[in-house]
Image (tube, rainbow, N blue to C red; front, side):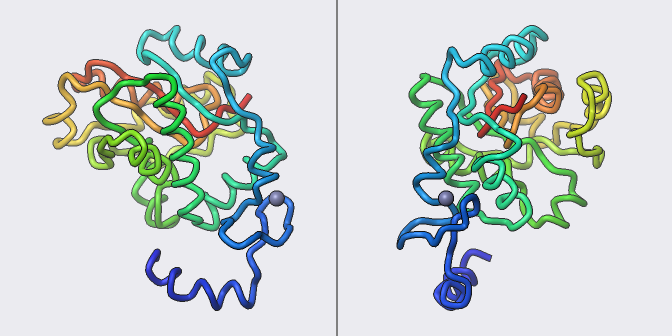
Length: 232
Ligand SMILES: [Zn+2]
């Protein structure tokens, strides 16, 4: 898709001039999908941010995940929501990579050490429908900054779980229970590794914890959860 887009982009831009996904203003030359002002308007996570402290506390209390890293605050309205929507439903690969690079920079600043990045997998039916996994794009962006490999074939989603947006914490936990499995390849290679699991948005953390459980069972030494954003 990338090569075709590159060839046709100038024609597409002529007919549909590129505008910001959030404020609809025309974009300056060189900007992609979002204008600098909207990009800057997205609230960022810090180590002492209330949402970060709360979410990290809840996730780490389960004794499965060792640390949490995230970059942005997901608000129901706002530029991040528009970007995430465009990434998920319009397939803007460059948005995923951009968010991933930001995540990679934060992980570097926070001194996160690991050996491999694993995106939360989509079920193969959903992957086929969508054509890509947005978490894998974010992982690829982060991997470029951290100079780490991304493994998309170590972990698989065996159930096409319901969307979690309307579910309570308990329902979410049940929803993702047994949804993930480590592949033969993963079983061969996970042993002793420190793994960063990457999701697009973390809310309760039940999805990422479910992935982490499977990887620990497969022999991973340590699991770090990471996402482009945290949501309430
Ligand atoms: Zn804008």
